[in-house]
Length: 354
Image (cartoon, rainbow, N blue to C red; front, side, top):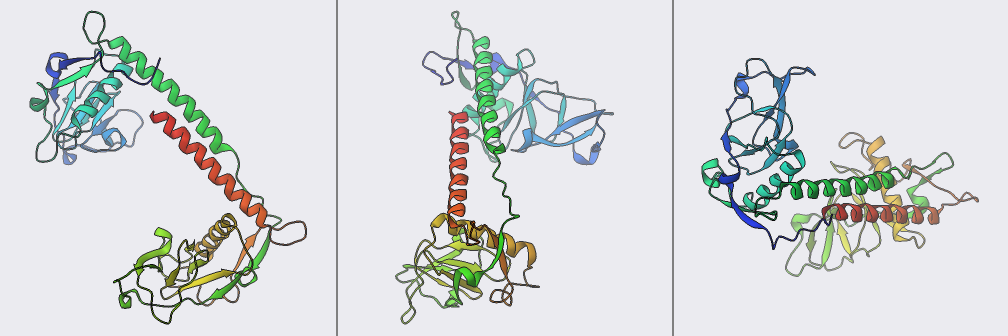
């Protein structure tokens, strides 16, 4: 079955004509007991956007009003709909669409229609309660008599499920393709074997000017490539060139190592690694990852930082060729392979959502 929907022939139906919308009994946490048992437990559904609304499992005894399975739960304030395959109870301001007479795949179709139709139209100040949506209209596929085509909905969702399982299988297969390294033949290198280690400009961001910002300012950060601001060029201080690496020696982001894509200055405790020979971008990326891993594994922020080790005993393990030299080609190809696998996985995920 074609998974792209043509809704031109669909028909509008009033929600209340098709479904009963039920106010769910509210159970408060102080009145229920969390269950750690495998048996005699029931789902406690609350106004959450995550995990199918599941807050926890509670003990089933002494619960008087249990919602039936194969219904669609929703909350007044976040307008999220969830298909509940088993019996459940709910917290405050929760409701359900009675879809017990429909097959599971059909219920999933209806759930999606409700999400598309109502989720963007209600908020905390305009809660989505049954009284407000009973008279609303939704569009559904119809059969030759003009009635909702429940069979079409079921078969459509089954085709989506089948397609998704195929793509997920391919995704898992690509994820299982081993990128594990055999490092038994690798060799330790000091950073000064590969780079000229420069102390950086050691500037304070608060002292920088921002009238004509053109230069990246790299600080002790683990995000945005370490760039914390874009600043004016400072007279008498030539910025470092793009393509060099920066490394945070201390602080919460100790070991953060990045290839800088634009000319830059550095803050205190951030050094610059200038390659002694021409190294490809991918090989630099490989080395950055190894530096970060080593820094986070054997050093600790504010206690045993990299400052006093970087020029002396800080070493990283790297692959070598048959002559015992750094194998930059291997590093380059390894990162290329990583990128290619990621692209394939992204494409697979995009195909699932089409």
